[in-house]
Length: 575
Image 1: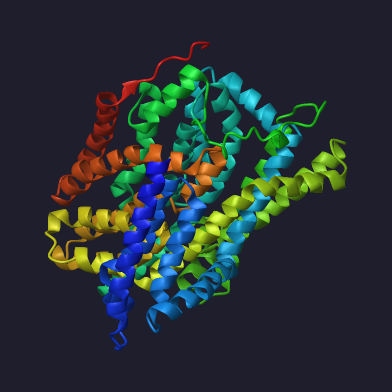
Image 2: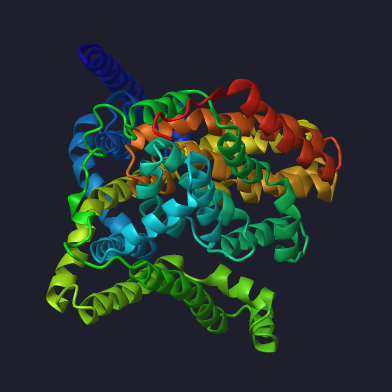
């Protein structure tokens, strides 16, 4: 502990000296220039500080806050002296956090997280969660089937990564605990079936944004394309998304793990400790989630509220998206919905335009009302007691909300500093055609990891990647398609690894796993799959080898990696 504190103090001292010396020199330049030109490599400091401190201190809130301070300080220095900047930084931080919450999307996500927490509490107290767990436990005869069921549930909640993280974890946690599966592995399965499946699903909250980026980037090179057709063409080249889903199945069926995850699984199977030692935050037993005394367990007490949440979200995405399209000026989209309102294309268009934060909050609120009515009608609670239970269920997720607000504020600082632009500027010159998709994938991963946002990374890179690929490949549409997929999947990979990513945070929350332990155990797996995505995926695909050869070979290579590198997990003594 003393060594860690000494390292932290030394790191911070060097950092403060570096910032002070460098920014004083920069501050003397009175010209109006962009932050990326002014600070250069220092634009990387806020995300690096947040990430490094997260691993050193294992305290995400403190790490994010210090990263936010450093970024706000750099921004404050643009038009101020060092001394004045220190005072301005305080105001800057407060304003950033207020702006983060003032954003309708962010506010909707926070409300959605809290309300789903209330639903989980009601379902648990009504005995629904325990009934589901017991029913699934009968199907889950051991660790393999328990993990496969978790994986399948993750695929079924394909329409939104946030909903995936918050629904699958609480349902499967009692089952995986019983089967002595570590919370770290549960968090990994949840996280690896959240953004990866939502990113390639043809109906999801992601697809509209992806289509818009693709269409706009093609317009920049004078190409009018059907964004949905291009989107479909990129799916086979989404190597990381596809391979990470396969990777999960390989580790489950082969019963092999490696890296930090191996230690976590050995600990869980041999000692029964599904949580790491000293994990104070996550080792709480959450007695408030135990069923009310003498309540009759029924799976319908879970299936109906959660079913309303899911079905309500699906219907809500369609109706909300349809309303947005019909009130807009996209005549092509309007014609599609008018001519065939229930066609796959219309549904996809509506889902793509829908405001996910509003829809999920609305569906969660509707599910909450249904759960309260059920609890009262079955005389499990009075209406007042049900509402009180619902509110109590929100309390454990307040920490998650704080983390999200800090992460969003830090993301805003990083954007204003020009961190993404700086990374692009130093890595995008003189790239050979066959290596271009790999470079784009790596660049997307770095930006997404540093910023904690896949959406932001896609927005930064797509307008650059498609024109660059079109130019480097002398108009080759195949290279353009592969490069576009590299943007989309590279952003998912970086977001998947990043400790400041909201989906990573929510996956930890859903699994009841310490956040840093989740990031630490997941990292070797994500990096391994990313390496295969590049070496066996993007490089041969860019060299012209058929995707129907490249993709199967990549999938087989993932299995070979798990078998060769992984170590067998010992069987639990009582199983």
